[in-house]
Image (cartoon, rainbow, N blue to C red):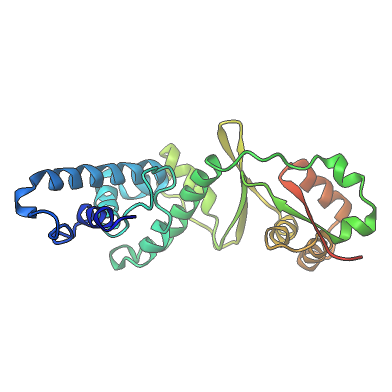
Length: 251
């Protein structure tokens, strides 16, 4: 980016002296108009990206919060489909919203939903390809979640609150202090949420962290020693969410 383009971006972000080497800002009211237009677009992008947070705060309050975020977080590029990365962590640092300590997690689920919708379209490895591997090879193989499938973990039952906010039925709904791991995946043009059993969550978490399928099985057994590994693996393959990696541990 040239020095002028960087200065222009800084001016749009609110630095009134950024363009002083090129123009007299007091004579350029159009820059202020442009800045206001950009700010409005950023707020609208956030409003679209975080529907549950909008429902929790109300549209007016959300727009005030979003405007404050946008002033300090200019987008990295002109495409705004992924704008708002970091919004959840920023919310967590707002003293004014400290009593709504669940709001950042709500924003994380909103943003993950958007990320899954915009993820690359990569096919999962079909179950028969796993079945063709010998037990020894399968144990040392690695599989990753495809881009349109993600995991997210919360310390409370957040999904029911998120869903209720979007349907207008959240009044009186309380979160329970129970850990919840969700599998979020794109199905057609929509999104599906699945609450995972602890052993399934442990298995898939190892996969996302780069571990082998054998290590995933060990994690599942560590979570629940009564786990039927054959049934668990069959269930995971039925989710059509994994892609075999070419990288394998040596046998």
